Image (tube, rainbow, N blue to C red; front, side, top):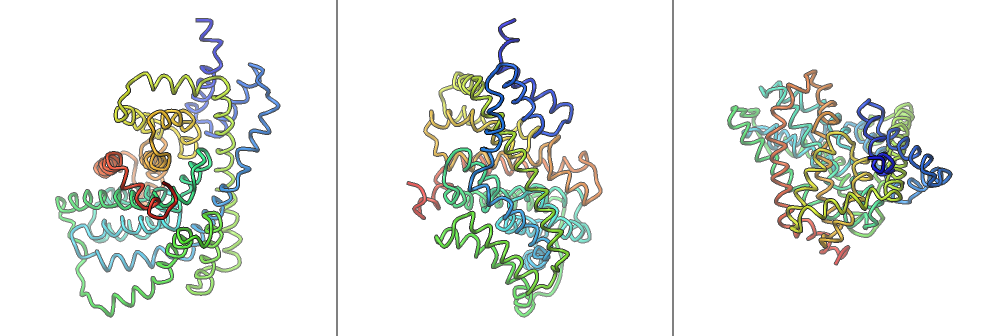
Length: 434
């Protein structure tokens, strides 16, 4: 018993979980537990400041504030409105047309903004009232937006992919390419689920006269918005610029269409956008630094090795192990945000990944899908809280229609797990991995 109480690995877990249960911010809980363990067990507390800085002094992380700024600019420029109007016109008349349009918009918006909560806010304020006006149940409309917005971190460019690449050392470009097909697979699963629900509830969509002239008018109005992901992703995959440079290019392009083309952004707006970007970026970087410090302490005290060995002792079957990992990440997503999940769990999971010979790019996409699921699983379900704030409903009202869409996401995850080639096809075709 005394040996257990003197085990720094046990205290590293306890000193993290207890503050977390007391609703102390995650970044503070991670840093506090790491510093206390390092100080009490004399592990070189003076090294904590160096480790803290080293965790964010990494070139790929430069892309994060730029992509956040780009997403804010695109939102302020009302680019989402242009895309929504076009897709509503294309899909709005079929059964569940507006729900399908919402999923398509979320998929498209994921190629512009790598934040799920920002995607909910950007498209939710437009689509949720429109769906309710067309006769859709408010809780179902909100659920579709909240779940589909999880695609923002699966479809590249993705902040979560960047964090995974920093932690594991894989190529950012490779994992960006690997996320494209899985994002589409998950989106199709959500479309099928939404279509079945809408058919059962008789959500028939809007009725209006369609013409090529009107379609071309709406397409022309959305053209500059549609061009954004083509420039960003095309530039990355075409070797024109790196993912970090692409983030800066997306900011410049967003300002160009926001200021010059759509004329929605002024000088005061730019200042407000910069302030908001600094606020969000600082929060992410603080969590990165704190989580990295915790991972360093976890490695030093043997927590990572003990946890990995414990999991390895459960089964030698890789699918059983993957199921266990998904379950752990599922419950982890209930308590941790995506950045913290990666920093806390990936050091433990990397030995398992090496042991079973899983491709790190493929595994990163699977982990990211679980992070996306975490955005809709309470109590830490940022997408649901943002959706509730827009719709003025409670989490209890929102949860039932979320479940079928969550199951559809799990079906997509199972397909991608059983057929890794779906994930690895594009990066291999582009020569980014062997």
